[in-house]
Amino acid sequence: MNKLYIGNVSAEATEKDFESLFETWKIPYTAPFLLKTGFAFVDCPDEKAAMKAIDVLSGQVELLGKLLHVEHSVPKRQRSCKLQIRNIPPHVKWEALDSLLAEYGTVESCEQVNTDTETAVVNVRYSARDQARLAMEKLNCAMMENCALKVSYIPDENAPEAVGNRRGFSSRGPPRSGSPGMSPRPKGHADMPLRMSVPMQFVGAIIGKEGGTIRNITKQTHSKIDIHRKENAGAAEKPITVHSTPEGCTSACSIIMDIMRKEAVDTKFNEDVPLKILVHNNFVGRLIGKEGRNLKKIEQDTGTQITISALQDLTVYNPERTVTVTGTTESCTKAQEEIMKKVRESYDSDMSAMSLQSTMIPGLNLNALGLFPPGAPCMGPSMSSMPQGAHGGHASFGAHPESESVQLFIPAHAVGAIIGKQGQHIKQLSHFAGASIKIAPAEAKESQHRTVIIVGPPEAQFKAQCRIFSKLKEENFFGPKEEVKLEAHIKVPSFAAGRVIGKGGKTVTELQNLSCAEVVVPRDQTPDEDDQVVVKITGHFFACQLAQRKIQEILGQVRRQQQQQVKPPPGTQPPVPRRK
Image (cartoon, rainbow, N blue to C red; front, top):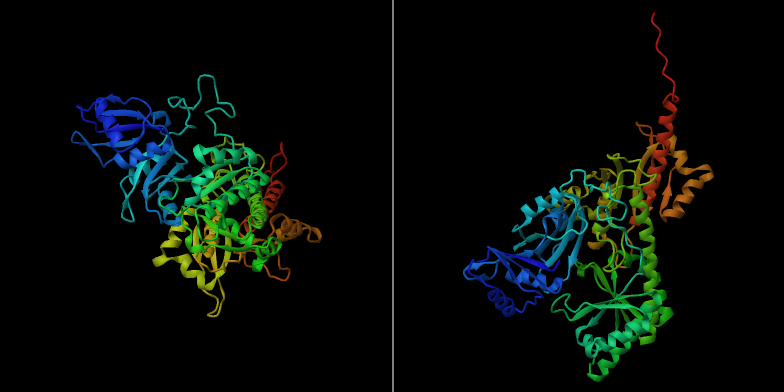
């Protein structure tokens, strides 16, 4: 993605003019400029240089009286579903960005690109070409909080080569699994990286002369270490990502702490140098534990003091909280080991739950929800691009999944945050998730909870509930050391309640063990007018979701059994009524 297209070029422009222009703006390039009538091409050494050329020159700089237009050079066959959106306000909220992108189609992924600019850049993949084309037309130059968005195509390496062939097959027939015509294979689940934040003044010491120190650390610890010097331009601290085994991460952490503290002594840096670990907000509640027990235990076992940054510091581009550990290098390293152990357990649990979600909800794109930390291995691409029948035995939802109704109980004083000013938040949420979302009237003035009624297919339920759980945490309706746990109600036919409970309560016990949610089918309830009873599910987001999906799977089995009983056996015909 380092080749640039330069448009609106004067017929009098020469290669030397472009060389002088790029040198003036200190933009590196690696090959001669290729000049055509009215446009030109050039290669940059890396994506950073290409991004700098686009941000600095496009629509900003004239050459021989003509305002240049610079963007990524993308062959027509690769102009598929991927766009790059630049000049995004840095403090924009997830909901606002999601809502804007979702207006033009289904967003499969949205990833931030690290640049030197003050505004943000994201790479977006839509599920279809026409959606990407529409987004390109509508969003380019659109205003967002006084910033004019800049949108361009970026190469889609997975775009099929044989665009001209209607069926999408080459002359050799259908593409084989793993070939360019198919979705790329999901990445293997590598070890969870360690993310640290270090003061800018110590970065040089960690790198060492000509990179010698950092090379030694990687060799000693058998790790890959990325120092993101250009991330968060002007910031006092820079993130470091350590990719290795848990043992390798711990060794690298210890060495880096020693280097920083030695440098602090040598430079007469008067302040203490704590260990700062960056943890994705999705894992912080479980790291803290109920009433802060997990964190207190780590502090007691390691002799350290641990604090966690406020939720208010989170933005759409900064989903991580800073865990600050104070103590000796040895005790800080031990604390890091325990903290990352908890984080990895949470990550593995979520990945397991999400793997089941993606199997039970064909087409659900889990990466686009921003649930995992930077550099962490995630789920593969959306399963919506898989051929029909590739979802295995869980295809019960079919091409048009059945709509489900879920009642989610939220704190009564949180209703305003979910609705938003003039109802904007709940409208955006409904649009993003593709679900009907309504808040039922309060049953009584003193009610402590209000009911959010969500109606939509499984994927819509997942998205809507995920955002509601996140919103309650972001807006501090749950304490900093408290995990968001909500109660959800789903209705099941009264004759199927026994299947959910199981013989002697076996099924519901297994369900609770699998999902970590509390699942209750009250025995004394009277079926409603539709002959349905309520199943109560209580837990954190993934626990609730997994329990809901498993219950829906049981109901699907019951429905299929009923249909088989109604249908006549194969080879037989229904009786013909006799004429009188």
